[in-house]
Image (tube, rainbow, N blue to C red):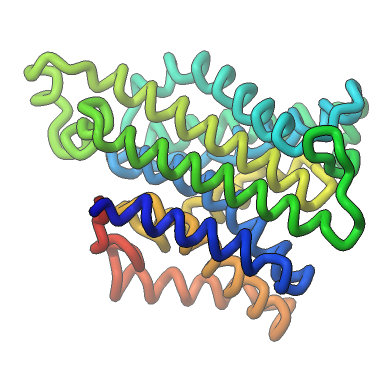
Length: 306
């Protein structure tokens, strides 16, 4: 039997059934973990091809601002519509930029993606119509035109996040089993041989880049809906660093790993900040150092489920 669909189905059932009994703060952490996990899932696609994007916050921020703009200018605050819009905007921008980035590898790919992310950050900081450095609040969440009660808003958003995340993970799992998805390790090992086989490495990288951007855009829109506020810091390089941390923490073994790593990251972050607000970054740094030394493939890198 296929393990990944079973595991994802079990996760979805646990969240939907057990969610109402979670405290509000726990629902918030789980929902943000789904948002970050979506971004890390896209990074996993790139990492399998040997590519590290230091600018994935670009699409995370675009997704968030697309969701916020729907409410600010059109009065639309439906959770599903916001996530779809965030993913579509991010994918459209990535499709254009992908013609450039698909030509580069290694550190050049990483630094160019970082530069693009910082360009967006600079534009948003100077844009007073979008709140400049302060950003702006987004409208209260709705689902299919209905506004949940105050006690159920967090659960509804978390449930929607779980459904979208599980659906995205299943689609990525199916993609990894296609010929295009299976090219990633070959591109990482020897791109020239991939070209000799008749496949286009540049096309494969372009497709993976657009998919990763779309996932990041959906994650950004979900985060914006959950927090209720967006600002230019969502495009800053430190945000991209968090996503890389999560991707390395989970490894590239299977599509469940990014979400498990995102939840673990959120737990470490919350605990460290609660115990030592001024040195929580050191706790994350120690965790990453131990991971690199003892588990270079990530916590779940050895579990290549099918």
